[in-house]
Image (cartoon, rainbow, N blue to C red; front, side, top):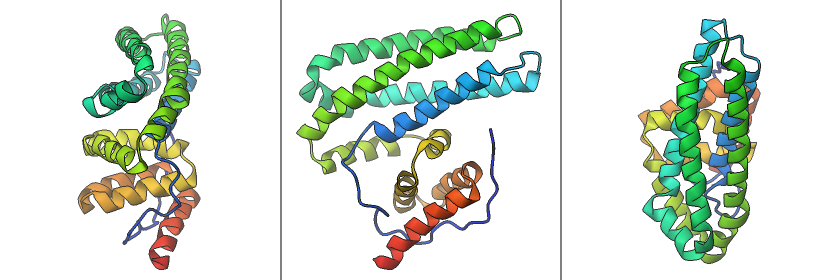
Length: 239
């Protein structure tokens, strides 16, 4: 994992989103982060020197972060706000979504045991299981993005969907949100990065936003972070 250091200052004032907002989508940005996190751990497991204790511990931390993100994400999807909306407008998909979540939980339980016991003899098996898990989860996310989300967008207004998204995001403890934010920022395009950080700037207390901005500074290359700041500052000047 590459960490960057930067002296770029966070934007001091944000009054609205820095870019024209696309249709509200409850899955796109978080799923980008989850894909990035899964691809990262698969790459790490494939290249792992299982005799290197530091490398093994790094992989275990990547898995712990992914595990937390997936469990938290499923809690949001299965919670009353989003699950109720899906049941109302995409009810024929509810059973398959619930089955996919149950299968994921089963796979995660097995992976927790395997990753905890990982050594030179089991490293190949761990890699193979992570690859299979990722393939299965990519299919599940595709169903949510290509089948569920269009129905929700057709049935609910952007304001209604954004209200659900904000309720979900504000329910995540700041330390957990920092874990989500790293792969999400790496996977987002510049407009999504600017929109996410601008929204956090508007909605979070200053001391909490400093945590989020610190993740951005450590995660994004200085040139990429400068683009984000420019886009946020441009809107502040225009408004």
